[in-house]
Length: 452
Image 1 (cartoon, rainbow, N blue to C red):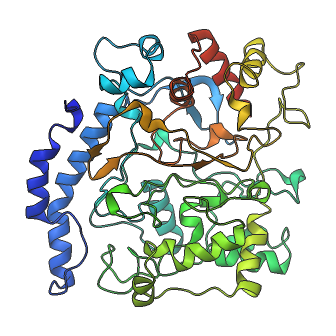
Image 2: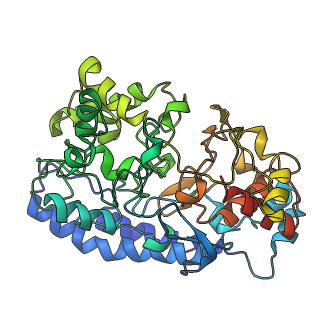
């Protein structure tokens, strides 16, 4: 039995063969021909992906009343994942994983989410980042072959505030600006020491990358200086820019990347897509040498890899990253739990659930709400392996426990952006962990998560 929203894939496969879905430049194809071919294909792949999103989610702009991110952007509310006809969350929660799988009832939005063009992959930026970067620096991060997929109201606020562990008295030190090579010195000259300033300079300096480089195998119209670390991790946070992981093969098994926030990296000990690296220094070096080029050292050499020197560059970059703090959480005490004099009754009930029936604290331990470990949720218990727009939905394996501090500032959620809201996240874990939470309990748990 095939799942309704993948029925069209067989027919679509024929089109891929004709159009050449894998958009790697052929040896006998010049750049003009490549651009024309990929531009011709672009509407087809955009339509395919937007139809998938519409079948999986309610993408409406529906902000929560009185709930905002740190600089005031409204937080989106409500479960956005669509259920099969006549199905309810209560009915689904009453089923065993085996029954859900045998009846093909796993919600479409809980399957792995593919890249907007999974066969091609590559770095892809929200329009807000593209526009502001071009305005400030003249550098254009537009790809001629595809566009970013999610609407701005479902993304983190932009530009995000910056909080430093060394100067909590200053609050947001970004002054509401996107930090780039053009303004970093003016913004930070009186806050950082020279070593940290050099680290920040390197973080906002573009270097060659697989899709943005000076060769003819690129996805920018003009020869390009490249991508900066802070193009994805804008202001040391995230703008939800995406990519496909470089450390998995074949391509159909590669995960879509949810760009993680760099806030609180000083308290984390696992880095990289499958968390193979144990320090932010290792990860910084890996990004430039491998992740920028899909884990392909030959491609890296051809396109101009920037080899960072460990002692005088990597350490400087890591030192600045380690200063990036979580946003203020005024309802939490010094141990990371709610101050009962400041919290609502619903938030306090949510905290009790978090540390009790919902089992969240088994992995997310205060004060930063991570155990610095990896856990395999084995979500594949609930569904049959299937292809979704070039992404094979199968076992994901162990995934890092990300910190939950400041979680309302960094949608979408999970390692591949498949969960759009905190309500979606609670429904997901209610099924995966077989918690049997009722509706009031789910509401209280979301209320608590918003205080972190």
